[in-house]
Length: 292
Image (cartoon, rainbow, N blue to C red; front, side, top):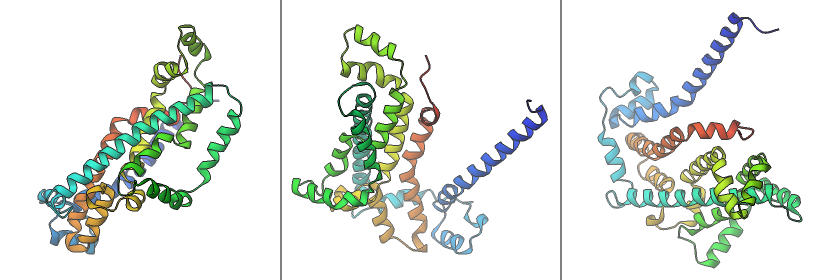
């Protein structure tokens, strides 16, 4: 028997209340950081010490904190921030593109190209997900040092061209549900595997591609360990490493407003990307088949 309208209304109201409460809890740290970034040095230190939420609210916002924080993020005014921003943009863009292309191509091969040992290869690839990154860090460093890539952006970019096991699994599961009749029609038109992957399969995988791009962007943009290991020059630093150097140089309560301002700036691209790709991102996580 179906539930009564009143019980459904109560259930929806409770669900909305829980979702709103969870959203407020998740947004509170971001709002706190944005508010502290607009305070004066004295008020920022006093607000953090007192722990009063009313003291944190910027009644008189100090917008110059952002320009001051970005100017001081390096040995030369603005140059340190510009170099770190350019490095982060280059690395993140290339890694996202390489991960999407390589993972989707391997996922298509695992789902639609019959070859001997395909299942064993797929299981072996999934087994690599059980290895933590710290296990392969030293061998990879020795390899990149032998290649002469240390203190360059290549160690951060080149591995992405070999795909990601997690995203290969996602693409493989999604592509396996594409109707075979659609791919057979493409073969009748004279397409090979590469043409089918590029012109038929990849456009259908927009939800998975959005999920892969968003996750890869967030992981790469906020990655701190890999740039710290492979990059030694200040001119090669990414924003995550530059922000950590800024924290070490301008730590303490006297400069917490500058640290929060710099942190907000580094988070803006992640927030904008998630808002832009939210629809496809959620669809990629929840969609179980292809409409047709």
